[in-house]
Image 1 (cartoon, rainbow, N blue to C red):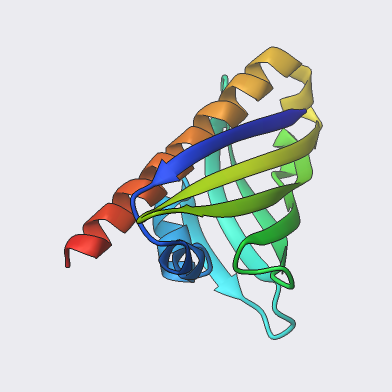
Image 2 (tube, rainbow, N blue to C red):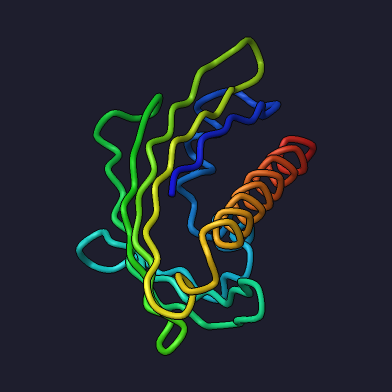
Length: 150
């Protein structure tokens, strides 16, 4: 499954990049995120509760960030285990483009699901993935707008 989108954020690129790497901000913006912790090896551990169709499950996962091309680009990969609900893995490439006092954030993400989640059908899973990604970026955009006011 692939997702591609872009969002315009009313903030300078450096501020957006810094915010995207702030664990508190990410945990606040990720739908259903209960915990986000950085490990000693730099990987992130997450606990997220998601509802996909009729299935509500808690996922525990690991996320690896590649910040070597920052601040204009970075990528992430991860995998999560939802127990009997199934598992998911995937990644995303993010590009940040400064446009005056705003930043255009473009992303291309891929994911693969297994287990009961996969049995729900690709349309429902894709629809849910799009909804969750839109929710994250809208939450993030709103958070950045509020932070700029302070």
